[in-house]
Length: 174
Image 1 (cartoon, rainbow, N blue to C red):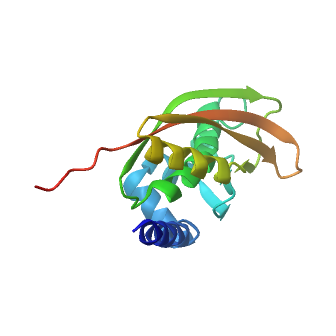
Image 2: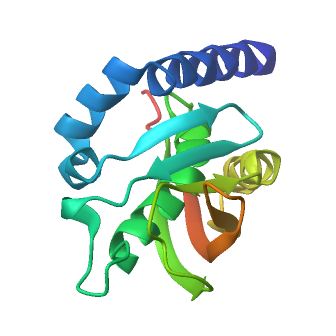
């Protein structure tokens, strides 16, 4: 039974990354589920079980009065780079797992005046925390790290997104 669940989880994860890495399907997903991300121009550059890179452009919709990318748009891209890794692991899981952002911290180093890339490499740690939430039956948290760099490779900002995961109780059949 356990191997069947692991196989199903791996298939669900692969299907999720297939959707996320397809440019047209991802844009439609954003339009339906996260319109702010759609209109901001968020794009998945690369996503797999280990890491996710998301880009956010500097354009009219994302700008602030100081001629740089608005911090909320940077935060959205950073959160997505961590959230995609988590969503891939919880999608279709039995028992179902709820996920919620419980905290966010950010540091800003340079003005973001062009395309900014946020990368999170905490995929394995996120998978392990979700597994612990399921096996222990208690909520678990992780602070995922995302680094934002401009197209010259200079660090623009860093974010730490705290995620909470909780396995939902299974209904028992009579």
